[in-house]
Amino acid sequence: MFAIIDSRSSKKVVITLKGYVEDVFAFQTNGLTYDSISGHPDIFLYQDNDHLVVAPNAPVGLFKFLERHSIAYLKGKMDVGNDLGNSVQYNCLGTPDFLFHKPGYTDPIILEVNREKEFIQLPQAYTRCSLVHLYGNNYITSDRGIEKVLLGKGFSCFYFNPEEIRIRNHKNGFIGGAAGVLGKSIFFNGNIGLHADGQRLKEHLLNLGLEIICLSDEYLYDGGCIFFV
Image (cartoon, rainbow, N blue to C red; front, side, top):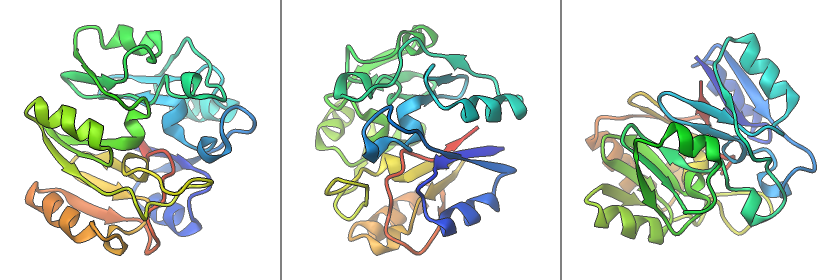
């Protein structure tokens, strides 16, 4: 098992994460998209249980990392760019039964590999940043619009206030970007215990039978998700 994480995550986070995986790829780009999300894997990668789709203009080092470790992937059709319309094509969430995204923004390859799933229309194009799939119909979000849609579908959706989640150049980040799920373990880029909603979230996750792994004793950092491949 390998991990992909924002290169600007703290040294402590990366060192701790290396204790759980064989290798960690420190993701970074330069001049392709907004500085705040330039190191975010979820801007350039889409992942579900069966597929990994990578933006064609993702860093060469990432493709070499995937190929060196014999990790299968597909190339998307659309380059990531420097505005809203072309920085969200891969930032969708796929589960065994559903694809979640804002209509009109998804890369065609992602739509193709998910053609048999139900497309759940969300109001937030930065979907993966804002939404965590735990297992089954259990989710966490830091977006009230997403929460409304999921509750309306009968899903369990825990709302986590995005305040106190740190990100470069913005007031706050989002919970999806600060987390990664591997089986029944959820990893956090930072410590949920420092957040005002942290104890509530901890109790919720433990009630669902999940193991909680906080990778450092720092405030949560939105680094564009932690990918396990």
